[in-house]
Length: 233
Image 1 (spheres, one colour):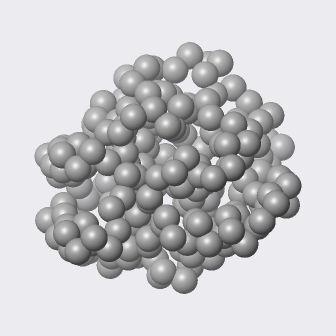
Image 2: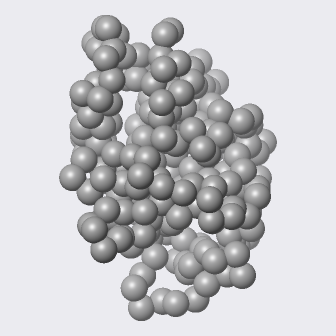
């Protein structure tokens, strides 16, 4: 396909996103700090590696989610010389499906039913799932374990976003804040988005592919607040 340079130059390569299936990732931040933008960039990286991605958007419209992909793809095209940009845009559209749920309607049985409908009819068979807007505050550990078990049975790599709140200082021994402090061990990779004094947003990688990260693991990765693109510092 010829998109290897985009994969090799992607700052997210430190996460080894291409390493096998069954990886479960978590992106945490306060509201409005770029969780969706990071999930979209993870999804696009997966697509450029030849995977099919379902983007599950909870409480958002298809149009708004698609607009994130359109905007970030434009920034990628600005930053890299891609010989046939329309081919890349078409390829992304073919390898991505957006699936929306109302906020109170997302559950393992409903997700399983909708995925099976797509797979059994040979409409779309994903390798990677991105779930934006899952309510970890209302979910108990058994619910998250159940979803993880289902994703593993489907051999899906999956990434979730979670919103942390300013006035909740509970934290797990590994450094993962509420509301995920009691389920953080279920995730192989955990990333916190933290605002810095210079208005950039730092990616703090707490765990990377099952290894509790040292401070150098994701050193220098930032989210540019003007474009919401991941940059190496």
